[in-house]
Amino acid sequence: MTTTTPMNPADSERCEALTACAQAAERLGFTVAAGSMRAERDEIVEAHLAAIYAAQADAETTPITSTTDQRILVMQAIERFCEMATNHPDTPNNEFHKYGFRPDTPGLKFTRIIQTATNADGPTKDSSVHCFVDNLTGDLLKAEGWKKPAPKARYNLLTEWDVIVANFGWASGYLYADYKRKPVAS
Image 1 (spheres, helix red, strand yellow):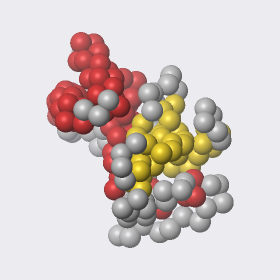
Image 2 (cartoon, helix red, strand yellow):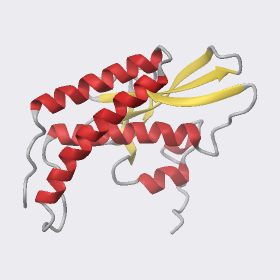
Image 3 (cartoon, rainbow, N blue to C red):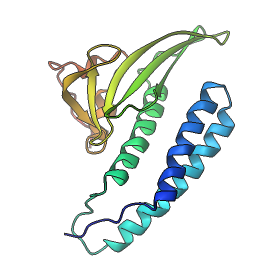
Image 4 (cartoon, rainbow, N blue to C red):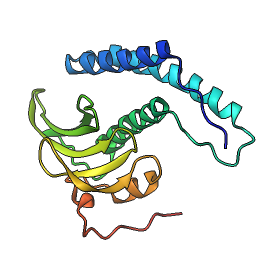
């Protein structure tokens, strides 16, 4: 099995700084600036991952063994999840309210996914925790409260994307342990 090389420390620090700046810019309403920062970060990550995949082209699988690489993949999956959740047909958006999902500032182990409801006139009306994501594995966990996830992973953002999209519900019912999963359309 081939191992991956860790990302250049300068690139890794730049990615973390760009992510933090993009989140701050978005909170202040500078969505264009936030988007360009995320695009620059994604270019750095994509270049690094392209180098990894090119080096492992002959391998049967492409294992990610660097913790930094894994965390970056999970970070990208979290952003992809929030975008999917905000634009999902099940998410109720009308002329009175606009619902959205965004990652909170990542903790050491988990990132909280926040669900927001915005009034038509602009100010955020309400926010609550939708779920938690394990920063290393990409496991999606139901929220036990604002600060704590439930102990058992329900899905994995890296390996079960199609299942998550097929079962997603804006009110997080798909995260309950007794939820009957819908089959994924082929």
